[in-house]
Length: 508
Figure 1: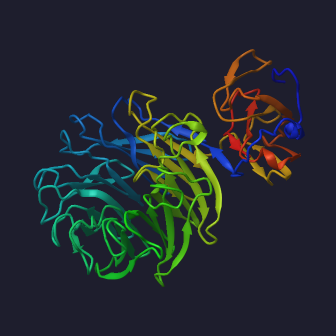
Figure 2: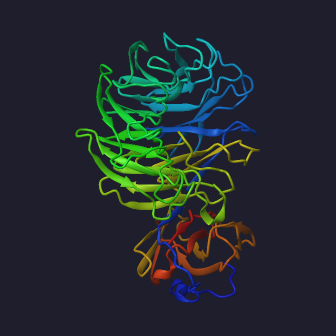
Figure 3: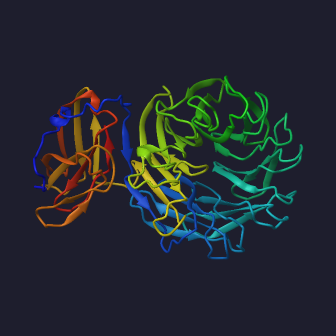
């Protein structure tokens, strides 16, 4: 049904694939949806932080200027349909507060960090709490002992009964030793202030925090137990603020920045070490630890890692899945566009890599605080994206994100039979299954309407591989043998001839 000089079954992928160099076979997938704020504008850095709970996505926009230059804002979105639900502003917001640097959502509470607020002195910082249903501000939190430059609110986490706030430049145990503050999430009263038993100057404890199951994890990438800036992470009881463990990488070394990012879920802690050197300087790694024992479970290193990828700059974990950001990755020769890696927590095995279909140089997808995951939905903020102007920002939804989307999935792998399955198409619609050697924006012409449809595929070897027919439920599938050399080379996408929608792009 679609215009193509030759209709070639996908088995023909075996032809002309010998390009004279080895390819890394790694399953890849592109976004289901891209979110932009209503009335977004240049320089707002929408996507500077993300958090998901119960299908609601909170997004920080730290340089929004509604209340003055870099005053900041935050947004709420419905993950199932991508609709913007609310825009949150601080009741006393002012220029330079950077409200939206950090966000966290749990139940009906949304916490938003403004680390450059100046209630207790310049850049002392604050956190605002909102009702996620009404969008109303409920409280403003400041450290009772706050001081100039503490950066209270640089990180924030919300969980059952508690709000945890990082203050990485607190000076209780020396310059920039850091601290965390634990608040009751109902009364907003301070429960306690916590610091490590071995706190020291320049530890930067509290730069990253997370909270689950009564356990708080906080990173201190400036700790020097394994050498200067080797880093560490600490576990605390959320009920009383007592330290319960200190986590170190088994192979930690100087300048790893272990603890720059942390996440916790269901008794497992994830810790990023973006400056680790398994594939060269700043290629990065991530670690998984068992909360109960404190033992290291896995060290994760991407098979295609490279120097300055900064894998581990961000981490998020939920329901047995871990997503790790590599903001400096140069996928498809797009300089530092960034990418994400999805792992199975129990086995430590890599399952897929997520890429932006419209990646641009220096987008840096996977940057600090920008990742969130819930029930297979991954949100990635890209604050440097420029769809609405330079550094206007965006958020990409991967995996299950975006509801009942027109979706392409595969089972099997190159070197054997691969089944391509299309879901949520128009019932009875002709479907074009296209492939190309790379992602891009090559057009296809719909012969039913004559309209041009922009795909997510490149022009190189762009081919209509197969025409399928959706059944009454909007599903179709096709199986064929795919040669192993296709792994890492070929990208596939489907088009619905009636709705003219395109699916996500999959890399074989």
